[in-house]
Length: 176
Ligand code: PNS
Image (cartoon, rainbow, N blue to C red; front, side):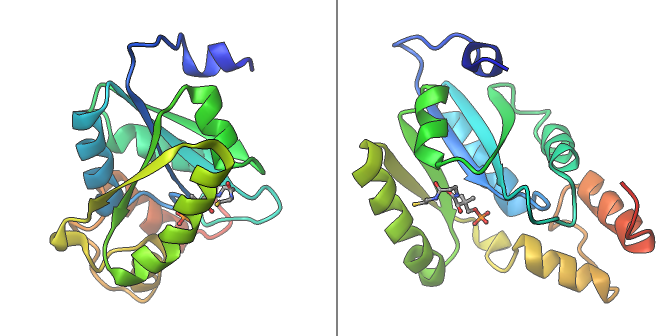
């Protein structure tokens, strides 16, 4: 698919950012950061970056569908997916001036800082950090999956569609 078809027309006036991640699956922490980014930019491109040799809990198509359904209330968001690509190349194609990420803790900052500096080194694209909402400071995709796998309650920590999809996947691990 061409760049134009994937991202639509890019004009100089558009302030666009990218919110990248694995989103396997999207959590309420992600939804919070994406929603806040959408209030700051004309358009947010949520980019699912995946390794096509590594199978996730959800397929890329499933992750994108779950993101779409979690973000229906946010009109200026679109969801795209890329495999084995540099994030900065995706940003250039998307016409994005910035990468927006949420920070839950100093551990997140230590993980994100080298990537932010490398991305700026490679392309000049800045990374904007939003402080994560403390309500979701303990929420990550991997922890959600672990808690759900052992019967813990994840209500309110992931969108309802994600909760249902996760419970279905746990009951039928081979399902798609
Ligand atoms: O949700 P995650 O797993 O924390 O997301 C990490 C992700 C996918 C955003 C990061 O690994 C990434 O940007 N990968 C794309 C490849 C790339 O550009 N690597 C160099 C980063 S400096």
